[in-house]
Structures are given as structure tokens and as C-alpha cells.
Image (cartoon, rainbow, N blue to C red):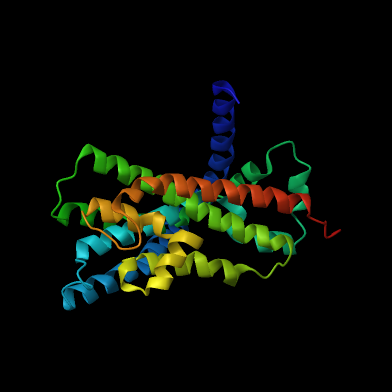
Length: 270
């Protein structure tokens, strides 16, 4: 695919998403209330974390700014993935209504259609949780170098791809059973809760499972070890630079599995 075709795809994506955004902005007051409400509900998690760590002077040997960096990376990357994943988060309802078939006959890549079928602006409320990153960066007693900023950007992009992969995996499972939301939530919303705290507080087997089997520790934990000048017994600190590659690999695998599921999909006939 050449540069011109990539530009054309982006222009088409912008047009389709723009139409969805204009539709939602027809009711501005409702939109603002939804964003503020979601930000408030999601922000309560960090408020609770703030008071907890302030009361007990940290978590193990982790300070509040260090935990805020973990929290901000996990929450913001998930918010971005949730926003750009389109209808994947509600894929089960699409299958139940028998509407998936019409996407198969359109002359556009299927995943592109999934990403543009729905663009929910109220999810900005979750992305705004990334303000915890600002708090962390300002309060961490670390001199940030260009290398650190590069790793931070790559980590945010990689984490977004990893969360996107989890949403794709949840959608893929709908080809065999429509009732998959709770299973997917274990690794999405449950994953955010887990990654909001340092992996070092968990049991050794748990840490190894989410490092070598389901490598969610690469979303934020290993990069934060590098950024805060820490070490871990599970893996050396330099694996932080493998995080974007691991996240990209998980994303590409999820797309392959999704395409495999599409090939074995049998229409509902409705």
C-alpha cells in the first residue's frame, strides 16, 4: 500500500468518524454531561488510590507518583484503544442482531469498518485519566531525558495496541458464542485494575503468568521500571524496550485470529 493510498484511507476514516462525531454533537449538553460523568466515575479510582497511598505513605516501596505513572499509562492507553476500536467493544450485540453479515459484503476491509462503525466521544472521559501521567511526571524525582520521553511515547502507543488486541480477541470469541462480554472484561477492565498497581506486590507465579503467558506487564510495568530507575527479579530492566514490540506482536496475532474466525463464520440467516 503506497503513501497515496494510506492518505486516502485516512481521509475516508476521517470522513466517517467526522459524521459520527457531528451526530453526537447535535446534543452538546448531553455529550458534555456524559464526558464529565465518565471522567468523574473513572477519576474516583485515582482519588481512592491517592488517599490510600497518602495514608500509608506508599505501597510497599512504591511512591504515589510512581503508582500514578502506572495508573496513567494503563488508563490512557485503554481509553485510546476503546475509542478507536469502534464497534468491537459491542461486537456481541452486533452478532445477536444478525447485522454482521452486511459488513461482509461491503467493499472495504472488515477491521476498517469495525473501527469506523462507531466512534463514541464520551470515552474522552476515560482518556482524561491520563492526567495522572502529568501528576507523575511533575512529582517524580527523576530527570527525564530524551530517551525516557521516547520510551514513554512508545509505551503509550504499544499499550493502546495491546488493549486493542484484547478487544479484538473478545470480538473474535463471538463467532462461537455471543455471551463473551464478561470473559473479555476480565482482561480489559480487570487488567486495568491489576496494572494500576506494581506487579511486584503480586505472587511470583502471577507475575510470571502476566509476563510470559499473557504479557500484560509489558503494557506499563516494565517501561515504568526503566523510567523510575527500578529493577525486578522477573526480567532485566532493558526488557522495557521490548514492550512496544511485544504489544505489536500481540496485536498482529489478534488480527490473524480474527480473520481466521471470519473465515469460519456461519451466518445467522437473519
